[in-house]
Image (cartoon, rainbow over all chains, first blue to last red; front, side, top):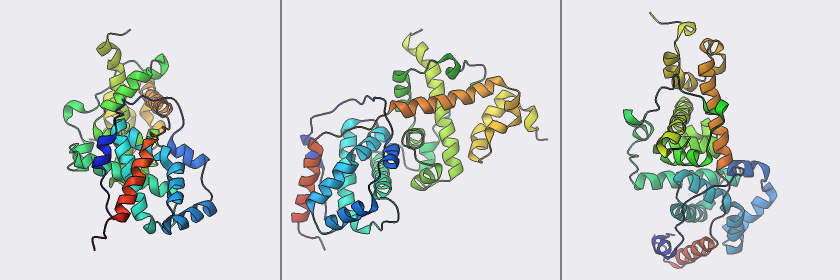
Length: 226
Length: 84
């Protein structure tokens, strides 16, 4: 079975810029609202038997989690739609390989992350190797913060500035930050998904947060704000 | 000679932080932090950033048209001859 999404893509007109509202992460949704094993088994059996309604039900259950994950990782609504579509097409194609060792939502979440990573590599986001992706050039490294004012105590974390700063993070930093701090993945899961060590995941997350702090400190000056 | 953890200046401590964190060491217990409010504030900032980011990104609903696109692609794929 093969799919072509390019023709569908051209039909979509909505090319919105992403803006977020406060809410809980997909990972929290999974934790707080899991399908029971019985329900999951029943739906999967029907999907295996070629029941389109059952697959529509799966889509309905998981669409928000998958779309949000794509959107947060890629930061672009149009691409997030394409990637959501690709993730569900892969789910349809590969569902026979799901062994039920984890929740379907966990499995689908990992599949989605892999779809996004593949897309980023194809797009040539300088992901020739994850090492390159993770180690931006020296100009992009988080700088030293000695003597700079702290944000937490001054209470100046501006939503818009933070959103911009996250969008502007180098691809590798952004990935680890989004997966851990926004989507709620554990370091061992990130390490497995991105094929590096747990220690690397932790240190990259720290560097990403440092980079964000630096951007937030520079933001008022760049924007001419108080 | 290696400097003891107690004698690190802020710059040295901060440059070692990624490795310290990566190694799984409990950074909050580091001797430098016991006497350095500047570096404690830095870590508080990083925690605040993580918390703010977590609240910033909501769960989003994809457009309704997306399911129709997916369904069409599935139907087309099932109708296509098996390449084997």
